[in-house]
Amino acid sequence: MEERKEKRIIMFPLPFPGHFNPLVQLARIFHHRGFSITIIHTSFNFPDPTHYPNFTFRTIHHHNEGEEEEEDPLFKPDGSGMDLVTFIRQLREGYADPFRTSLKAEVGGGERACCLVSDVVWGRTTEVAAEEVGIRRMVLTTSGVASFCAFAAYPLLRDKHYLPIQDSRLDELVTELPPLRVKDLPVMETNEPEELYRVVNNMVEGAKSSSGIIWNTFEDLERIVLMNFSTEFQVSVFPVGPFYKHSENILPTTKNKEDHVTTDWLNKQDPRTVVYVSFGSLADIEEKEFLEIAWGLRNTKQPFLWVVRPGMVQGTEWLESLPCGFLENIGQKGKIVKWVNQLEVLAHPAVGAFWTHCGWNSTLESICEGVPMICTPCFTDQRVNARYIVDVWQVGMMLERSKLDRKDIEKLLRKEMGEEMRESCLKWKDRANVCLSKDGSSSKYLEKLVSHVMSFDSYAFAS
Ligand code: UDX
Image (cartoon, rainbow, N blue to C red; front, side):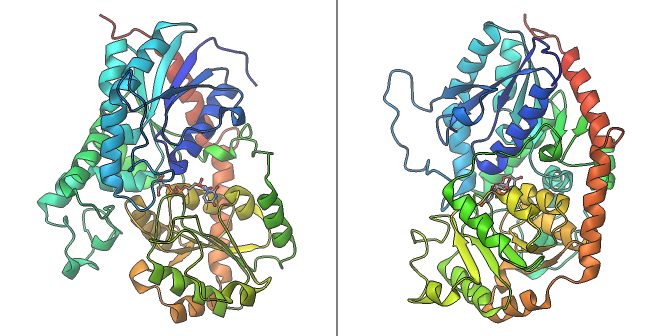
């Protein structure tokens, strides 16, 4: 741990695990480098601060001052089963003013605040507030560079009529963004298609006008797209990832009973035999898809560990749509749980493959633990990540969501991941470690990032 710098970094995560987890990992890195950390967090999904004793938390509420905060029916705990585009708009509208007030109070008092690091999806929401109080603003991009470039290309994709996506063109190569095909473009289903364009545009513009972009990726993995990005955009970039692998990011030691049961079960499996299945913290699936996956897993010989979040299967609470006797029939061969400590699971020697929705954190974690992937992307950046996993990094196979069928699943899982793919995974794992080593790119970028932040003078914009 470095000497305290008497400088405070204020951070503003988007309140979902896929965004909050990497932000906290980055906060740990900053803290280790001597900065104090304040996290301004929405009342929606507010975390338990006792798990983060080194940080100061501030809550912002989306109700009007003086009014009782009502439970907004849209603000469900994990965001599943809802229109995410609408939801992001509501988050931005509901929390913009409270954020501004909170930021003002933070910057005004106590230890010197040198910079704001906000999730890139907040877009320009945080820009005005930062300018008002005279604090420099950096953004944290929790997705990869390749997908960000595809978001940044939205105007071009619309001009060239790739967007909105037409079913007749799904397999067509997007020549401006190889190796992406039309079906890989980062879109999502929404009742507010124009709002999706606004969210994306706001995010890209907010990143361009920031004092720098911090990326949870490493240079070797996304070298070409990083170069393309830097040619096109005049903003400093800091690919210092994978955050969780920095030595100061010690894995949480608090384990609940279920974690222990999962580890005990994994300990009983043969090396590299278990298929770990998880679709992250937001994606939901139809009951029909759920049943195909369930039967596919049951019919294969592989042991499996499957995360089914409550509410993840549309219209159900948890597992009640499984046929009677299904769970008993699986016996010890498979395990279905509500949540796991994913980093521990992926690092376990029994795990041989990860069937994933290809969220960026999952993608990076799997690559860094050397585990090949089966890719079933659901929306936005996951589609881009999946294409890169399969075609560029060659560490996974595609199993498209539109083709989820129990027989195909069974066949694919039986096939297992060949030695070639495993070797490719281990190669990337090594390269991640090289980037993180003392003279590696992520370490060098981290040094640059610390100097960059130290060079900020708060009140730089103050009138
Ligand atoms: C979303 C997007 O899909 C992702 O691409 C974007 O960059 C961030 O927001 P999410 O869908 O939740 O995130 O997926 P992912 O990025 O993979 O993040 C999930 C996180 O939750 C990972 O850090 C994973 O380790 C963790 N997790 C997931 C668990 O710890 N346990 C679980 O059971 C499932």
